Length: 255
Image (cartoon, rainbow, N blue to C red; front, side, top):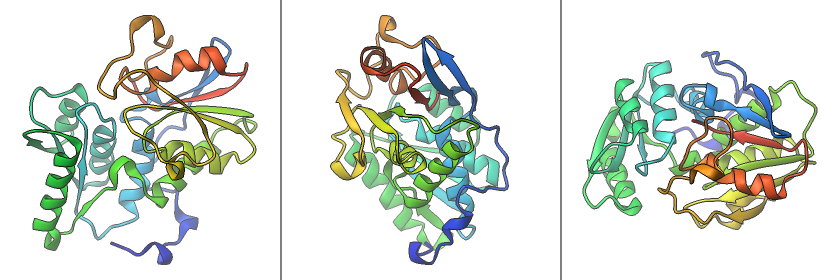
């Protein structure tokens, strides 16, 4: 893979695939970035940039929890750009995200005893076995400088004044760190789910911890009044209603 120190970051955020700009809709006094309206959600934007940055790679491999949204985002990006996507997931009933990824041509490898460590090990093994075929591994959570920079540029594409307060759900913290770069003066909050987010991953965000495990769906009374991933973004809404300032911005990654 191309060395980062030789990558031209001025080109990050520009892809040959033109996706619709994020749309902002106000809900209950909160400005919500409605990337649930984009098939594949926010990470599709960043994965398009990431995948296109490495034209020598023919196939991208990702290790996904059953409910992980990145599997679908990567499937869309590879479909957009004529690349192959392979995703390792726990063996068993497919989440709707996996089903939709398959429809886009994604190769799914089911892993028995599908703990995160096992599916990650299987993904690494697959890459190692196929490394001479132009196969590469996507970092877990998309935690890569190109993807973070693409997130920043997606935020800067919004036709708004820089927000004073920004909220996201946070696992690997990639989106939050991108927004922190885009709006350095904003107060940033993250709601942590299913991952012991490190200080590096949090950046300068102040965080809250969701009571739900990663694979648990948010209960109906706590869900936001717009389509939002029940195992991801929706878990932030109760914290936003309690702690956010009027006019704060919430980035809704997907449906």
